[in-house]
Length: 513
Ligand code: AMP
Ligand code: MG
Image (cartoon, rainbow, N blue to C red):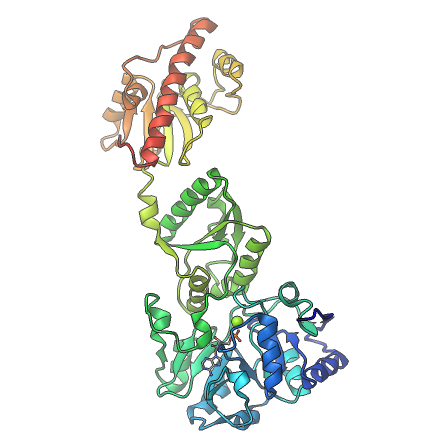
């Protein structure tokens, strides 16, 4: 296809410039392609009654031509011109949901070319609520076919910039009306069956239909992702909405999803992969590795729908290798969000609890008497190891009367090994340090015994030498000259080398405790 110049025109939906819409309408009437905003996503408009225009649409999008287009109308009476055998419930549905994010499927009339319907005898019809869309449809003659204005297979466009990135040079014009409101495609309801059937979830939900016309059914292939039957909306069979990177959805309770994503993003980053994370406003602070994006707030699923495709596109721009996503509640518009996310992931989902079970310890706490010498040294030594899994590494003292910096001789020894305890302040050990996911390693036998006697249900408490299988004791340098600290450092650093090896072996499943 010859590249062409794509005109981009800004349009303010509160103050529409009618000359721009006239120009766009003329392009459509003459068989051209114009992308325009709707409340769901940007559409790629063409004259729905022209066979040739549909061909151009498929070519620009790189879309398989068996994937039918939705015909957009602006006036309800126009439905009768393109659809036949319109069932009686249609009036009530249109009264409630049109104009709006609902597409209904009917038997087509003769004036609708097979190019537009992908060879089907049915036609999909929607009346969008965006005022720019409505005015454009009228200016074009009343029937505008419009699939999403993206390259086939990429996330649907929610801004004019997205359209330009995909279709610049391939279409005549883009009307830029700013970011869309809803962000996921319309609900598709098949009116040719009784009761009507939802073929694609969207902002209008099954519950909303039910309150107007009674129960509707849902295409089972949407619910059962392992189904081998093709979905009834031809477009739903493609790996749609997809970013370039592999996308994996973690499933479980939110706490486990966060832990699993932390684990996977740490492991991925360690292997040199650029990892993307789809997080929410509520969970953002829990992540530290990778490109972390806020897709919206869990308090308002609409915000997630609105941002999802933009976030997927941003990961493409940042060239991430793999994306991990939390799951979202499949209620209300949430079911449309999960449907699009699962399609973007090609149905790759993994159980968060399975991932979480692969890491026994998430925190390692070293315990000494005053938390000013050997404990902080051990912690800093371990932090300087390359570890397969991510741990919070810290230290505590059995008797800390007030917070103190590290012992100066300990600091001097660490400095000579290019490390520092400068950021350390001593802290008292307490019950908070006893947790299922915390490995407590004491410097001396006495510290361990004291913990075990004070905390009845203390688990995972070992002396450091016992845990690494070394029968030496760690010398106490307190009150000794610098050489005493040096000697202690020597023993400690060997034990911490062994500890790191053991933790890494445990991470690979090669060793238990
Ligand atoms: P898009 O406009 O990009 O949202 O794609 C249109 C969607 O509507 C695709 O998933 C199509 O398969 C679906 N669709 C359009 N017409 C029909 C139809 N006559 N029967 C079933 N699905 C349809
Ligand atoms: Mg689409």
